[in-house]
Image 1 (cartoon, protein in one colour):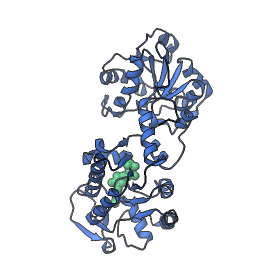
Image 2: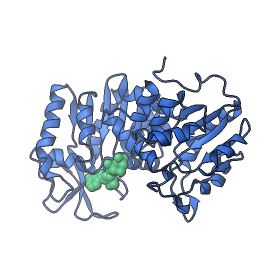
Image 3: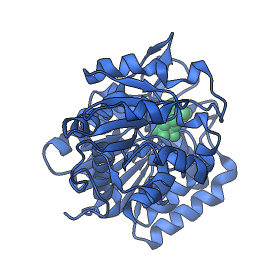
Length: 396
Ligand code: ADP
Ligand code: MG
């Protein structure tokens, strides 16, 4: 497959060259420790490959939202040791002051973390002066941070215009997976869209109806669609003011030959807490004082049958209030079906979204999907069909 962007396969001789590598090092911290090192581990293929090929690897990343005001709490100095531990190699830290001199002392194969890019106010404005400030430290630019690619910042977009630009290995894997899922997928394609509210995913739904064969709507947002169809959803989370929008989406799906799947049985409770008394009922039997908190078993089984006939699945949003037992049952069950079909080779499955990733981990199947994106905002913008500036700058 020829790629519309250059990768480390196209970068040529890097030995002795200074390579600015944009990574996502914005890890969660608790009590001064990295509480989840997923993002650090994601950088390893690119960073070790470049260092092994003799490059001088200069990591560019933001941390938090300092808005141009340097603070100790947001200094990337604190990540030097944890990152070195994950990498199993020595890592240097370079402050912006004296950066040119410090970089000039590095040897081929050395790895350094440059200070927080957002210590420059112009980073987020994509200020040409900040782009030039970064660019003069490097000979080549590698963008490996898909999760920051929805922002046109100096380190995520600007640099690609002034230095030879390449996708890193993690970026490459993400772009290939997303292309297989929605760009140029094998049909039939199913999309699962769940989560709390329609209002946060309107653009996702609008984009998907024109691209997928089956749109499976679950979670709180299914209530809005059910209510628009005249179903009494009781005390369920529901955006009644979006009824006409829900109708428009269903009409657009009709015109595009996209089948919309809404739950026809649901799990309801009178209280939203762990393990309350529940009933499993037809959607037309929800009482006025009940809440729909999960998709019912009959609907989940027929959704599994839909997936069995599909070649591609893209999934964002849980089917129920999965954090609170037993309202994780539908999500876990459909996730396991998707994982098994993926392992059998009949389905390409791509999922993303903060809570979705948590739900797939809870189901124990995240590593059995074809690809799980941890990119959050960038993944959602991609599901909305938007062009991501950081990606566009690489695919010029
Ligand atoms: P993601 O982070 O993967 O994009 P969302 O943030 O859109 O997903 O949605 C996740 C949230 O939706 C979870 O907190 C879950 O509890 C909630 N949710 C799902 N179904 C329901 C429901 N029926 N009622 C209330 N909340 C729900
Ligand atoms: Mg969320």
